Image (cartoon, rainbow, N blue to C red):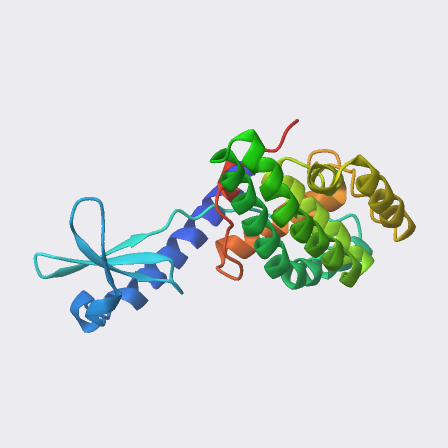
Length: 233
């Protein structure tokens, strides 16, 4: 039974790949604008088709299509219709909060990189100038998000940085500020101390499944380092 199911999935996937390639092959590499062509590590020119997630080469007069790696992920098991509705509800929240998450992550990583280039004395001055402003932006984002969006935002930040929102605020503002923001978060039913754990938390499992699906189909772009995250058991 498992073998038959595997073969069915494989044949469906193979059919999808063949149809996708047929669609792309119809257009030669040299029909694309020259300023959109790229060069790979071997010096070969190619055009990257974002919609199809594939590189288009022209080799010896033949069009060659190299598809991106596609990770097949199945949806988690749903216990009932309410479970399924909650999954698609989370998908809407994820898509709304994802751009804010990308901005916050880029700014946070930028500050971390800048700090590594400074000595301790310069770091203190830099922290006063930049980190307070960044902390204010985190606080404003948390205030503007709904409760469910705040939960998703907090989990995404933990997935990407390895730190909870509580730890990030404590790092930027000190423990007293983090304490009060945790109190406010708990009032809004958002625990900013709770880590992202798809193995033990069903909501986090749903978020992880949705991330992989949205990245797979190109609805959302993975943040740098997204593939390095491993679910801890």
